[in-house]
Image (cartoon, rainbow over all chains, first blue to last red; front, top):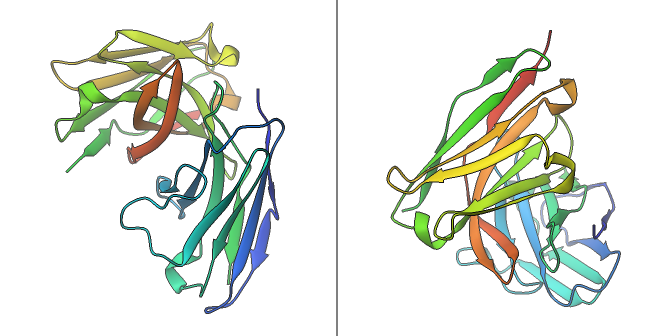
Length: 106
Length: 122
């Protein structure tokens, strides 16, 4: 299985900050990388796929980048509703696998 | 509007089986693959496998292959996941999720159910 390694596992930030989360794949996955946001007690929400394409309705302060094995999710001008856990996922090869998540805390 | 509604929470004894349902509305059931993803308490997300209703085809992650069954009923737009011989390690929230399927791959999940908590305890 392709291993997805996210860093950091958690971070503290303030409203208005810019934060970046990194996701590394154990092998090349081209741009078959997604980012999800999950809030406590809720299902994940797909934000970005593939790699840098925002899903409809996702605010432009979110951006994704990278290809191959290294990817980033950046949130500019952090808003109160952005405090959540973020997961990356590869769908280049079955089984689809997720990173362990990054919790963005106030 | 696409909506996935899952069955309610379950409490099971070790060694028993659990079946979770996921009913889709919004007319897209036949266009998507239904995946099942679980999340143990305080943990990450784990894809278990899924079913492609239009192809009557299923995929199971190797670690669950002997214990899990995925089915779908197109007439009721409902998918099911049955997990056998459960243990405390299967205690988790189980989500159904819809995404496209192509070239043998389950693509990212655009729609998710609300989750079903399965607790395994003696």
